[in-house]
Image (cartoon, rainbow over all chains, first blue to last red; front, side):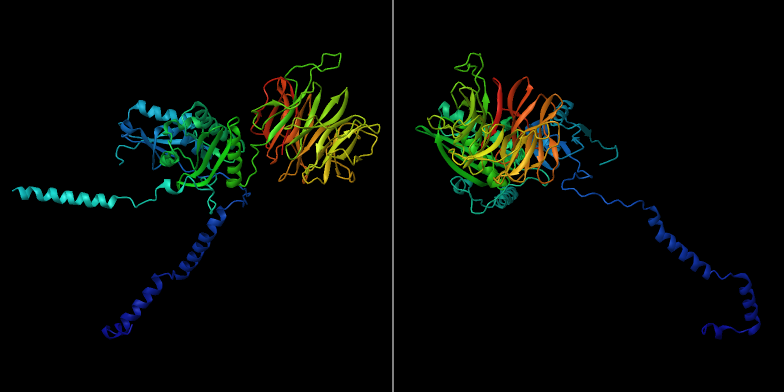
Length: 152
Length: 460
């Protein structure tokens, strides 16, 4: 304000006209925004509460099975053809002990499923052999992992 | 020009030498120096499995230090029996022995391929050696923690070559004690009555088969006859020290209580001295007294006497029959069967005959047997339909559960010394045979295969 004052030259007439026009054209939205913001906050706070259903206190038990089970990946690399070594997770093991290791792994699992990651150039026969070991160990579902064309 | 060519080669050579030096593993102490002759370490190490799963054990064939057939056979059978013993208590996951084939057998305890055992998933590995010295076997056994490649248990045993199974049983019991603080039952024995030899009773006109007392290892091996009297011998009961068996013997058609010291060549003693008809002896837990039932005062009542027959005392006073006594593990109480309500039911009383109370209310309950600590349970024979089943009554809570479910008739339960297993007789395979089963009703195992077999009793 104090800066504008000295620039103004033509006196009170122009200033008065502008004041009249502004009072007619603009609605004072500040209270409206205030109310709307308060309402918005109220709904933001209450919305998550509305979604909550009945509260359940789960019973405690000394032995439970993990709900989100860790998936087991068995990898058949291309080198399997030479050395007969597959991987459970990151651990390389000989295929001779695969069956027993899977049996041990299945003991604590409710979902007896294993994902088989096999190199694309491994022979189908070799992959079937590995799957045979998995089935013999009590694995019920074997998923074969593939990738989409563009995926790396 | 030659210098120009040689320089890179030299550099590469130097680099590779330095890489090689870098890759030298840090010096590890050779396993052979410390481990084999060591007795159980000062620091007890127990082998843990993955969280939520029992530790996994492997028991490959023991190493035969000698080439003769007997040593090699013992090395194999000790490992097999040890595997069975450890599997029996279900404390460990025992890796099946047929999966060991791909792992090279160790020639000595120093050359165990731990990496290969770890690959198979083993947490604990039992390695043993067998050496024959004159007429004895020297057996050494170590339990290794596979991850740390350290021995956590190691012992040497010497014994006769006649029964190599006892080596395995001893090792199993000691490993259970050291690793799980569990009293194993691998060295305990079973006694039972059987008619397998099909001899007829002497001195009678009827062609009736004798029943004699037989004993066997807990797993059914080494079954042998303990009495040879050509009579009816029934209801064997091991004395707590395992040296004597008390049983009901029909002497001149009159049942009486006999005590045979089975490892001595001596005639049985007759502590009840033929007063009336006496049946079903039961040793008190301290081995000093025998409870039994007798009709010497007119109708069947429970009596207690010292093991030598002195101080016989009547405990029950009721018009109905009071039979089949069984001591509590503390010796303070006696369970027995009475038909005072019309049908046989189980009752408890204090060891002096006071405070009688009824604990079963069903159509028929017979042959109680009290579990040793830590379980305070009474197993008995319960009628369920046409046959009988084994029921277990929890003394503290009064809860009752069954462990057999109408497969044949199941009778005469007897607890193992650690309370985790029962022996009983069952007709589920036609003839009457002895079986063992876990107290949870799992792990059924057939003990006898020939003849009819009755009334097992498991030694302490």
